[in-house]
Length: 387
Image 1 (cartoon, rainbow, N blue to C red):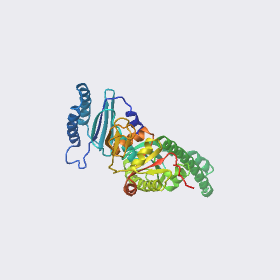
Image 2 (cartoon, rainbow, N blue to C red):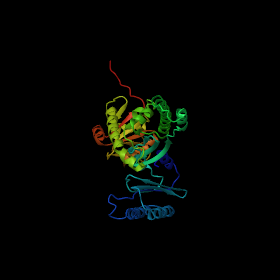
Image 3 (spheres, rainbow, N blue to C red):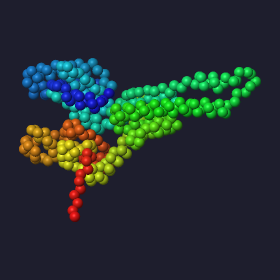
Image 4 (cartoon, rainbow, N blue to C red):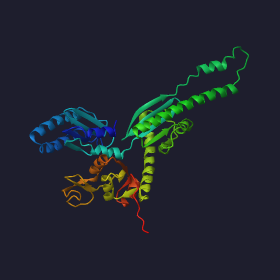
């Protein structure tokens, strides 16, 4: 399962490592075997990369490349992309259900694409409830993984014995009203207890995984008691889906819920951008201002458009990054080189402990009018007033 913490760990693994991002599934799978086209691109790119390396480096690179080629040659891909990190003491392969840009690197683990994917595809919790129990899943990058399952097991055998013990002789009619009420009250009490347990599990998993939202699916009579026990800070991020999906297979559950997730994302992103652009003290807009606040440590969350194709300029000496196309760094007077914003921003966010939000659709169109990027500040700026 894709984990942001693991990505940050990989970025600290001593090199040199081989990093490969490969599209393994074309849009039309009938055109050609996906692995063959992947290997063709890999062979061409590896030849170019090996030619730039010193002899000893080249030998180490080719050894890891052979491992990668064997892995791909014997593989029947079930994913759309694969990411591999390979070194003398490391082998890690991630199958992804989203497309990546083909990339091959040798040296430090190249995690920029993964960091961008983590910003672009949020992590969600999915809770499916029916009379038999509750299942809790995590969902990200088109993939769902079961985290926990709770069975609603209620032992009513003793209740029946006590309620019907007096019906021992034929000819005596069993009364239903009061006894049925007692039975129903007991059942309700058991379901309230089980609902409390599921709510506690949701709270704990939300804290651990930091879900962007929790989708609670099931009949309202079962989901309402669970939602009612969630804390006020979590409740705004709970999305009710009033469908009985408890007995469907996980892949079918995913198909039912993906449209609900897309709808929530669209609404949430529009709200986020409106709030950012409407706050003059607690937020800044525009790439230049965002980069400056981010590198001063003042930005806590950076929001950018998904299709923003911007280039920024990073100093070869001190690493300071700006939107200015000057060849000389304004901090140390070193030489600046042009890099894609998509490459620079995840590294800067990781270095200055900031989060990245990626928006699309109408939210992105509105953000583009303000420069394509905005950021929340850790502390509101002072507004100078003239007397």
